[in-house]
Image 1 (cartoon, each protein chain N blue to C red):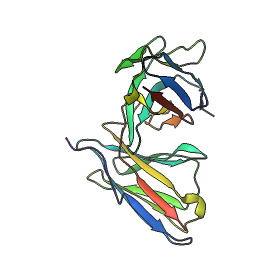
Image 2: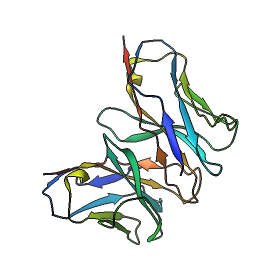
Image 3: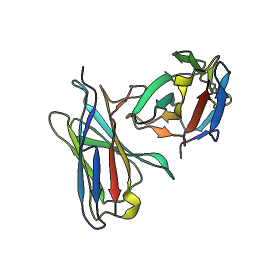
Amino acid sequence: GDSVTQMEGPVTLSEEAFLTINCTYTATGYPSLFWYVQYPGEGLQLLLKATKADDKGSNKGFEATYRKETTSFHLEKGSVQVSDSAVYFCALSEQAGTALIFGKGTTLSVSS
Amino acid sequence: KAGVTQTPRYLIKTRGQQVTLSCSPISGHRSVSWYQQTPGQGLQFLFEYFSETQRNKGNFPGRFSGRQFSNSRSEMNVSTLELGDSALYLCASSRELGLGNEQFFGPGTRLTVL
């Protein structure tokens, strides 16, 4: 079945460091791909999405490119801030509905 | 515009009891999905409703059920609670059904089964 694999955390960075969180997926069809973020004590928020190959999703300085050839959707940010500390989830949606399949999540901790 | 609301926010039950959780979607949204979040299994899809009909179901036992009302509000029910049902239950709404539709998540209901 469909699945999403994320790099294990936690990821600990200093402020202004470069961030990459790897995400690969397995799908039988042509999914839409998402990154969600969960700040401490809050619900999930959509960070960015991409619906077709070579699409680049971006938001708040975060970017991810839909790479069909490598079945990847890696999240990047050029300069992280303390406020970026959160859990990041990669997800896909393939079925006709909107059901999301999530990765396990990667905890990011940024220190000043 | 109000976000997705879930009630109650916290719940404590004992094994064998049943529980009902409620979700009110964003106004105008017709699709509601439910997810279970646990430290061990992560986020897992439970089911999805659209126009009062269950459109999709995850791999959970029949003790987990749900329904959607004509105003798009949704409830999920868990019968004969087990310790392993302790989790954060998240509801998400989207405007329509279909690939790429953004889902907006509520804050969740934290269920503890003793």
